[in-house]
Amino acid sequence: MAHGCSNRYGRKTRRMFKARSAKRSARDRHSPIAPLRARPAFPPRSSTRRAKVAIGEDGHINAIIGVCYDVTDSVRAEEAREKAQQMYRLMTEEASDIILLYDLDRRILFASGALERVLGRTVEEIEDGGFVNIVHPDDIAEAARIRERPGPQESVTATFRMQHAGGQYIWIETTTRAIYDTKTGAYQNLISVSRDVTARKKQEMETEAARERAEAATRQNRASSPI
Image: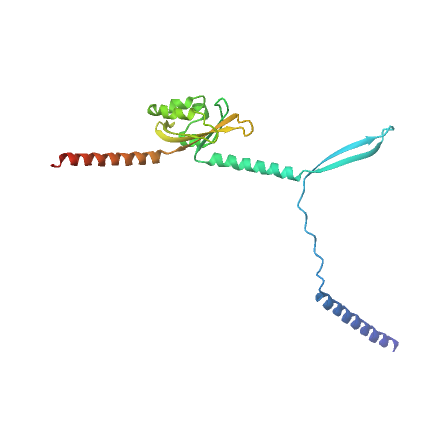
């Protein structure tokens, strides 16, 4: 009898706790208080550390003084500069224009890969005035214009023929611009950008030849027509 009563009350107690637990779960689901969320992670920072050790008369370490500096901004700036330089090298190497950078003595500091792609030439072949040896004899005076030093915010442009390593002549349009120190105004470097304009020059010459033929035909017709 006692055992049956115990089971009956035990079952009743369990049902009561289950009902209370269900009510708490429903109340929590409809609670206006939002559940706690994990805090967003802070972006990583870069730092440099310095430490100084204080040693007592007995030779034991008494204290360690450490200083930590946040260098995140400088590290990010350096990374941005390196990325920009990589992009610049990529653009200049893949550009179709021949890009040359000269120092004060007209020595070539940099030459883009287009020098070999367009002319089949190396830096050694055009350095120290060697480019004159591959300029068409009729265009020497025009090519000499790029030896001039442009003033600040100025440029010099010349169009002439250069001989490809394969023997044929290619029309080249070269524009030079000088770099001056922004503070002292002193001359620093010279940049030249050259491009293949052979197709354009051929079109111009064909157009000019057609115009001359038309003018000659007009003059001939006028001369042969009766007054």
